[in-house]
Image (cartoon, rainbow, N blue to C red; front, side, top):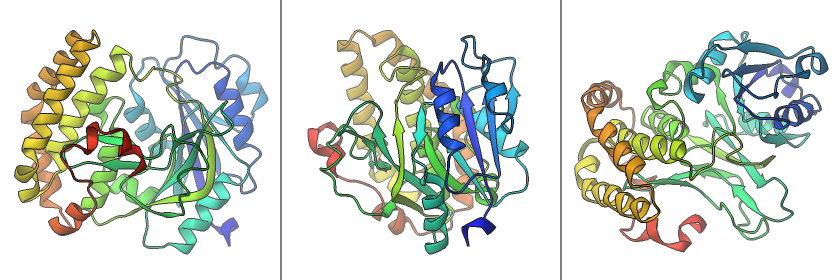
Length: 329
């Protein structure tokens, strides 16, 4: 039955070096080949595109003149791919096992109530380390990758529902992605997949972690997670995600924890020598709130689930985000 389902894979490349060739090699050896592979290059200045086109003649390419960000490049790719049922997002530093796409498609067929699917992500280069099994969202507005850094044999995760999928290796029904408005392009990069997952959940869609859809992920292949770029965008965007999406009375009930999380970030990154960038992130988040509240009005006006259902999907506990055990939850 899987041969009747069409999937287009979108890869956003920016200075990914030799990782892009490894990624494409893995994709072209899938047991269930995608209908199309599209690489959107965000004005790379390295040699990641050198000679790659000739090695993969069936791959489609879009080369942008400027780095427009992960969100815009994926949205552009989603508009340009041919008519298909599903879109799979894959980072250039994520190397799919041969049955990765087939297992995602099988999971979609067996679980028609789900529209968004996440992968089992191993840490590339490590024999026994997890990169993640989906994203979780805490009532404070903080989000993190479940099981990141744990031993691959430790979590023992089975296929099951998650809050949202990490966009480094995920699949979504194309119609659902476009109807939801795709990734928020004002985010540029970081937290855009959590925001999308939240908006989808508000519309009544659900996300499934697929335990046998496996990729090996380098992680932070283009930008390090502790870089100024990552700190700025991640901590600005988490504020916007909370303000846009946290519904009704939950917004006010958990606002104190959200404020605490932001204050803790200001203190922590200042101690780490990144005071300038974290204060700029929060200040720019505040300056953007008038626009974000306009977005909030539209999003909450289309709410298709109860606030109780949303509340049940969120992690709780004042101390949990600051605990070492949080990734095991």
